[in-house]
Length: 171
Image 1 (cartoon, rainbow, N blue to C red):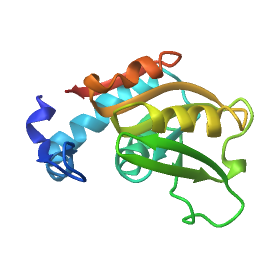
Image 2 (image 1 turned 90 degrees about the horizontal axis):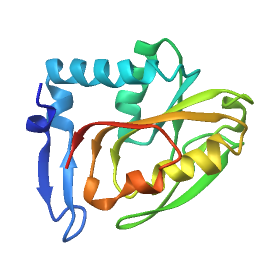
Image 3 (image 1 turned 135 degrees about the vertical axis):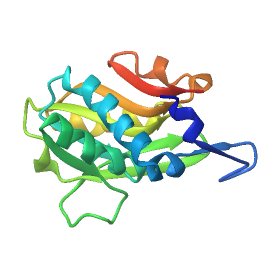
């Protein structure tokens, strides 16, 4: 199945020069949605995770479904102020700005095997921050990172060379 056919390109959004990859048409198609979840979960299951961590906001959409398919738990990494205290935070640079993610510190037990899911691998900053400033800081082990889309021209894979990575669509 060619999932890229279901991704809509939105030029100059959220700012000029950025070609946003809109996955909502893929998510709206039940066959494409099921296929994407099955493929990501099949790869992730090989990593034997205890938890799938999904990055807000679009990492939640497939992350929870991937966790269910694998048979493990799901943890949301949220934007600041979305979770009740106490939280740990990771700040990171985007290709067009800066952001942060938070999670509850007791959600990742020491030694937990964590699969990170986000919708797009761009520069790798989001996943690097999640891996080093959240998962590993709390004593978890990142066993892999999976994505719906990889923007290969932004070289995020190089930044995350210490981790096993998988993406279904490459641009």
